[in-house]
Structures are given as C-alpha cells and as structure tokens.
Amino acid sequence: MDRTTGRPNHIQDYLIQLHPNQWFTWTDSKNKVYANLRLTEKYGVNGNMISNPRSLPTEKQCTDELKKLQDAWDAANG
Amino acid sequence: MALSKIDVANMVTGATPVANGGTGLTSGFTNGVTNASQWRMHTDLTGPVDPISANLEKVDTDGYASLGSDMTVSSGIWTFPGTGIWWIRGHGNLYFNGDSRHQHFAIHTTTDNSSYSLASSGYSSISKVESNATQQSSDVDFIFDVTNVTTHKCKFAFENVTNSSVVLAGASTHNFTWFQFIRLGDT
Image 1 (cartoon, each protein chain N blue to C red):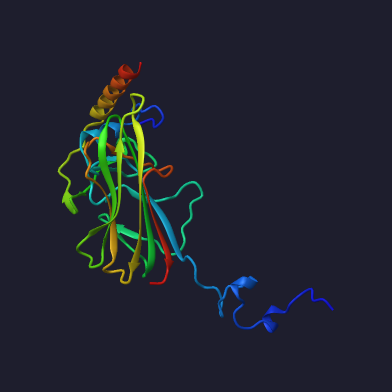
Image 2: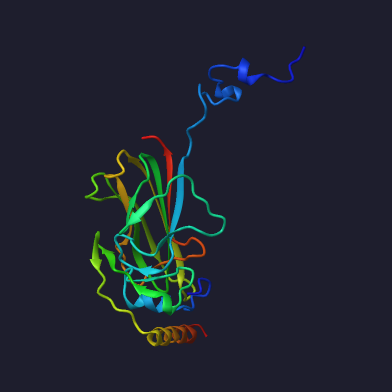
C-alpha cells in the first residue's frame, strides 16, 4: 500500500486481507515478487505455534485481486 | 612554575572523582552498554498474532550496526545472548482504512521458559481520517532482569484486535514495526 495515499500497490495488500496472521513469507525480503512467495510452516495463535493450514493463491489470483482492490480504491477516491 | 602537562600514568593513582572530570572508578572503564541490536518485521500482517514469529530480520539498511552478540529468535521466542539487565523495546506501526476501537501490541516475558505473562502493553485505536487509510502506532518497553538465558525469554504479540483487518506494517527497507534489545548492565 502506498502509505501516503492508501492506494493498494502490491500483491501483499491482497494477501494480508485474504487470511489473518503470518501465513506467508518471502524467500527474499528485498524482492517481494510472486516467485519468492512461500507459505510459513507454522504461525502463532494464542501463544501456540500451529501448523499453517493455508495454501498459496495463484499468481493470477494475486494480480487480479490486487487490481480489484485498486479499482475499489480509485472509485472511492476519484 | 605552572604545569602544562600532568604525567597521568605515574602521578595519578586511585579514583578521580566525577566532580573533577574523572569516572569515579579505580580501574579501567569497562562497563557501559555491551549489547544492542535492532530487528524488524519485513512484511505486513493482520491479526491477531501471538507470538509474532515470522518475517523477522535484523536491520540491515541505512547505516545500521549492532553491538555485541545478537539475540536469537525461534518460533517467535527471543533468547538473550547473555545475562544482564536488558531493555526490551517494541514499536508497532499500524494502518487501517476504517475504524477500530482497539488493538494491542505487547511484550510478554517468561522466567521459567514456559509460562508467559504480559510485561508491557500498548493499546491503540484507529479512527478513519479523510476517508482513507489512517496510520497509528504503539510503543512498548520493559526492563528485564535476565538472570538465566535458558529460562528468561520474551515474545511480542499483536492481539485483542477489534477489527481483524487492521494492518501491522512491516518493511525491509526501513523500520515500520521493530524490536530493540539493549543490555544496560549486569544483573
């Protein structure tokens, strides 16, 4: 997300709304592209580490859903 | 005859008082901060999350440097590199395109490597401003007497969120949500 305008600008903006918690990670934190997107093995819930039940969306889902978020933001903000 | 130089090595013994510009110590000044490091969360998340266990990295940009041995973190549990009085700090950077009555950024500690208790609490609220995503932050601090590195540990959490779409922000280019550990002195 553009922190100044609030406009979604990265697939991460879709991923964090798809599921809560730390269910995804990147193989390279400085290069957050779909090819580097991975599931975390476990994440923390109520003080316990649980196995991650999520699955990764496809790259097309990510880009399509990001586009929807951007369209919604554009419609709301002119 | 006025003295222009003093042979400190041979003429000065004992402690030079602080009032006279000394340290008040009888031996070399070997105390002070020996460990300091800063970490951050490199990716956004939505909560609740307890503990914050993934997407953590030691700060590596903007001229960063640490002091002494590093903290280690595994499954969100932070282990200290040595005993001492440690200053734990956490900063949670938040944003949300809506209203949220409260969310809780927290430090939890254990002294038995098992049961964690709430040590420091930072509640915040977000009210949407100017019809757009609105920023907020929470800071938490705790001074922890780490007498045993095997039993005394800490973790961070983002919990009690009244709206699960509130984002705890991360970045790998600078610090949004970050964690800092400074050893202040001996236990």
